[in-house]
Length: 144
Image 1 (cartoon, rainbow, N blue to C red):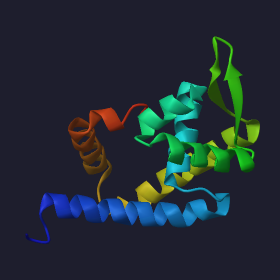
Image 2 (image 1 turned 30 degrees about the vertical axis):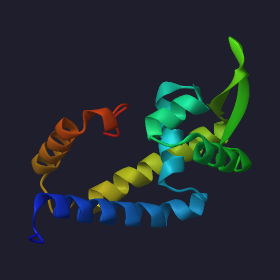
Image 3 (image 1 turned 45 degrees about the horizontal axis):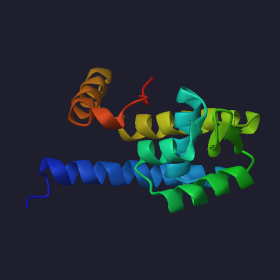
Image 4 (image 1 turned 90 degrees about the vertical axis):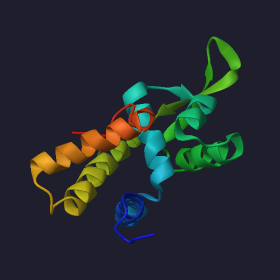
């Protein structure tokens, strides 16, 4: 396989973005999966652990650990769902909203740095192409 095939280039780009984003998230004591949870809660409001697991493609046990971590940091809280007391709803705290906003700004900064060699039009075109290939992964969208 040639080193410049599309799949290899996309994997390398994803690794670069992930590495740079991970480095910056460490000051918040979270990882990209935690960021995704905060992002979903910011844009969709409170969700159950099951719903968060479905949206992030995370099994039940790992999702519990992710939520436990966010709860220990004071970023989310679990509440009983009024319509089904067996279901725990995950809510952002005020601190969680602040961290979600700050980490979203970090995500945009990393993206801007990595895509700096492209023109604005090329960046938009890349975003459009990738969104078309994986539309289910971009809802809600992480775009400016």
